[in-house]
Amino acid sequence: MKIVLAYSGGLDTSVAIGWLREKYQAEVVAFCSDVGQQEDLEAARQKALRCGVVACHVLDQREEFVRDFVFPAVRAAALYQGEYYLGTSLARPCITRGLMEVAAKEKTNTIAHGATGKGNDQVRFELGAYWFNPSVKIIAPWREWDFKSRSELIAFAQSHNIPVEASTAKPYSIDRNLLHTSYEGGILEDPDAEPPAEMFQRTVDPRRAPDQAREVSISFERGTPVAVDGKPLLPAALLTELNKIAGEHGVGRADVVEDRFVGMKSRGVYETPGGTLLYKAHRGVASLTMDREAMRLRDTLAVEYATLVYRGFWFSPEREAVQKLVDDVNQPVTGTARLRLFKGSLTLIGRSAPRSLYRTDIVTFEDDRGAYDQRDAGGFIRLNALRLRTTASARQK
Image (cartoon, rainbow, N blue to C red; front, side, top):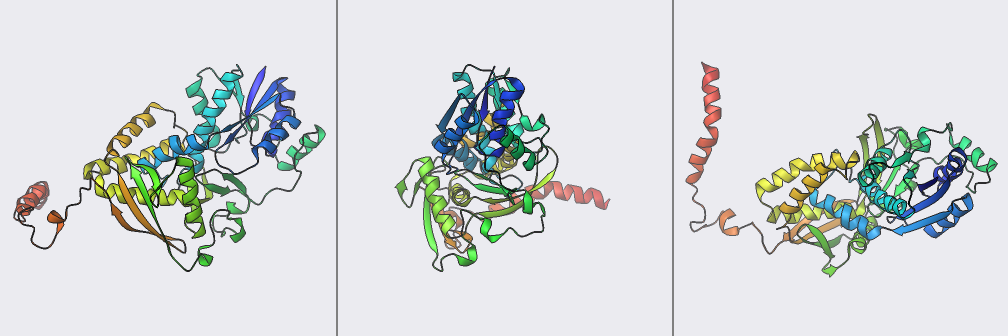
């Protein structure tokens, strides 16, 4: 039996290697995905080999993560519960795609992951895996083993000569990729406790950000970001550049109490510096170029889109159907938005587009020279008031 394990290099998945080998008498193959977490994945590969895997695949997925997952969500204006930019939710299906590619190469039908039985990631990994292979066998050690604490995991690692850093529990857990860094658990489980200032990795404290504002322009083609300050960039490089700019000015922090798919409320603190700029700029260009009713429909579906992604249904007929509509209404969204960053604040200060629907000859308060006949508004209002007048008359009777 051969098992391909989604491997992070941390305590849980390192212990999982030994546990899987012992419980299932299996060969374990590790898979490490680079989605921009800025960790030494070669060191992780060597560690996996020392832990007993027969092979370890490291796959650079940064470009596809931004191109195929982040940018589609930007076009959809997808925010979960109005605040969360879906950083982890978008990374998991990308990692799953790489995991299933490795499983196919290794000619095995069995995979494993280190997600716990309380969170959303188990759902995201497994729904995606079934999409690629309906008959896949999935092992989730956290739902099977008897370990109840970090100290028990450390004891198992030491007794089985698994090389892990035996330290006390972290004050919080961290997940990082090109789009965001998330922090949860530990001292953050009290929703009334302010996150410690030293926790943040990607954004400076807004109070200590530069005293000079920074302006940046972001250009889009058909709703997809293509350039920063007029310089064309590939997806991963573009998001990396925006992360740097926003992080230096303290832009992109969010403290969220969200509803997990499994039913509980949880608190997450997020840094999404570049993503915050992308969403703001995209809406700026869309406001000029996207038809009013098309945007209303897109914004209505944005809530459903974000919920689908958050709950693990990236690979689903409904998400793909919504994506087709979203991408279609983004066809005219070509142009540039200008943003100003200052001590944690983000302001849209200008937008332009070659196919703008904004016409000064119609909207002007000066002489409109016949472009708009204000007398038409009376009939427009009376027709829209017909149902209200009818209802009011019936109520008065």
